[in-house]
Image 1 (cartoon, protein in one colour):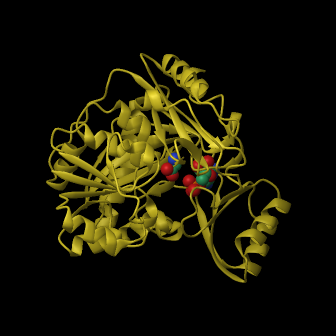
Image 2 (spheres, rainbow, N blue to C red):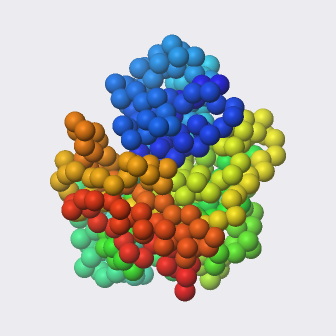
Length: 413
Ligand code: AMP
Ligand code: GLY
């Protein structure tokens, strides 16, 4: 069958590669994709990710059997709805269900109503009220803007002064929707979960992202600077608690409230003294979690999508190895950065890199995004995989990229 992947980042590179390996799939297309994924997909740049009519037309013309939507934007803008209405099979939730990611307020209300463990919160839609709230609230306090923010709409304020500044930033005018959350202490981890209505099957391997820009979890929040799996120091008991206390109840809650989620639910959790609590939900694979998880997945992703559609058992099989991915990003990211600098060193060994933000210019590749390229290492344990990943980082030649030196160190303590 023919499959179309929507999106053009490293996550979509990994999804396209994994689908291309499936015996069930004859041809993988990507819209808009990118130049460096041409080894695993037929790339159609000429159609934009936001051109929903163009995508539907393409799907009909090329007789695509399944569309897999990678990023959050087209999901929250209703691409899945439009395709499904035309009879197309889609892996990715409709617009209403994608609110679980698109609206912090929606997600928090649902969790409160169904008693799903998460940080205590309060929603304040008026700046004056927000200013008076931060005069006396517990510190640190976490402020989250409602709506998509690519991992950058969250401010953790440690002092009253910075909390007030955060209010000024998040309320450009008197009215604005902001969630104020209790600060949770603990280690973060990510659990991808296949969901079809109230049928939920979490991946039985955890991944861990590194959200901050710099070593030792310092600097601003980013989309993710590296990831690894499995996470040996976060045990099976935590995965089980995440399943019974979070994955199953949230799927049931969405179904009960009339939101029919079909696709991948990303549970971003934090392991507190009271057990796992939800930091965020996403309505799609994590990036860069997808790159390491799908590298480690031995079984067939396309087969799993079909099993999910039929609500059949999904038995994921994992390679007996660890996978570490280190992100090289443009200097300046997540703030402003310059584009157009040459990047070399990955082409010969493209099976060990996932490309997020590179563009072909003549015969060269140049950086074209904040996050640029993820170097992958596989090994018998995390230490080995980490070493290989950094060897591959060293092969990338560019004087305009930076990366963290401590990806996966938490697993080595
Ligand atoms: P989010 O976009 O909600 O995932 O938040 C981005 C990052 O901010 C998370 O990955 C955490 O590192 C941090 N964060 C968000 N909410 C909290 C919280 N309630 N307590 C502690 N850290 C948080
Ligand atoms: N890596 C975090 C995310 O995809 O949201």
